[in-house]
Length: 155
Image 1: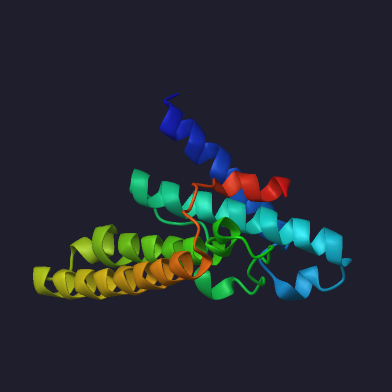
Image 2: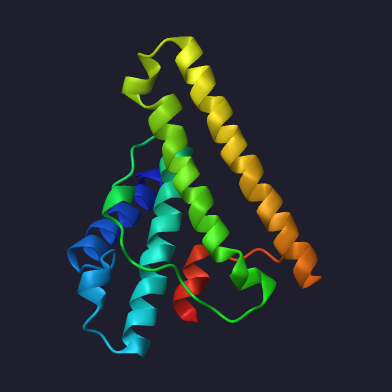
């Protein structure tokens, strides 16, 4: 089995398990103590980010429905690297829209003008996100070091 296929198998299993456990649901998390809740939230968003990135890269549809996610965003200390995590979540959502609006089988059946319009909308969303990240970096006066989604679980 090729590495992308193995990665896809692992992340979809993690996605299904996280949703079965209710990690995507604020209601399901409401009975946990704060430490457990924080760990579950970080785990959920790490799986979410990784799954969305792989979906677009491999040309597959997401196993998450963004509309079903009510888990709060992760909260961290105030260093620039961890302040970027919510921006990465926003970018992952845009990646999901990119697949759905431009590359999915139903999107490919749309007229090219429709897909171009959708692509322009997505570019505007990415540009807006990039501006907000630039403002964050400038306000923090720190260069950003890359973090990986799975590092979030270890905090």
